[in-house]
Length: 142
Image 1 (tube, one colour):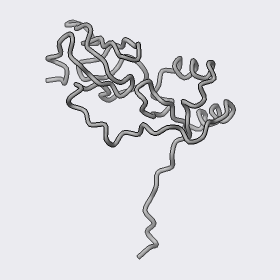
Image 2 (cartoon, rainbow, N blue to C red):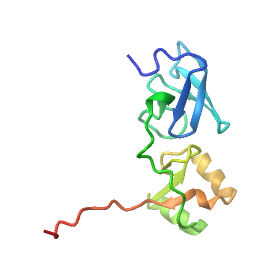
Image 3 (spheres, helix red, strand yellow):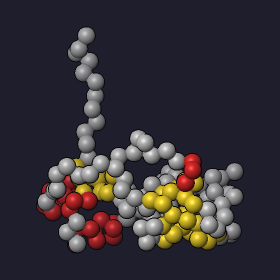
Image 4 (spheres, rainbow, N blue to C red):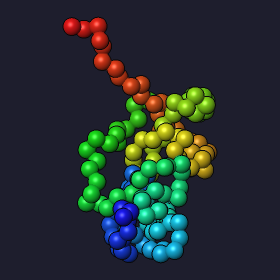
């Protein structure tokens, strides 16, 4: 049984990409099971597993609003605004994150290319940041 098998029009949901939304349509015989209207003015189809028809996501990004815990999700503001040149350089090195409409930071490779291009064209450089390096424990301390 898939996560959204019993979804109904009007169900309140939360998408990690677009934020809060509501199921607006159900499709019985389609790859995409439901259409969601988000408060961020996006309308996106989702599979019955909660995978969006937007971007390059292969895992569930949509949940029932009451099922999701966002306490460990990074919504922090950008600490340094990058230049356009630096953004392009970091894209080529796969070391750039973009702030999705929900406020969550994800790799630009996960976002729809047109979304990233639009942000760059509108000079919204504050919605990009360098990926943080993973902190490792110092094994030399006793």
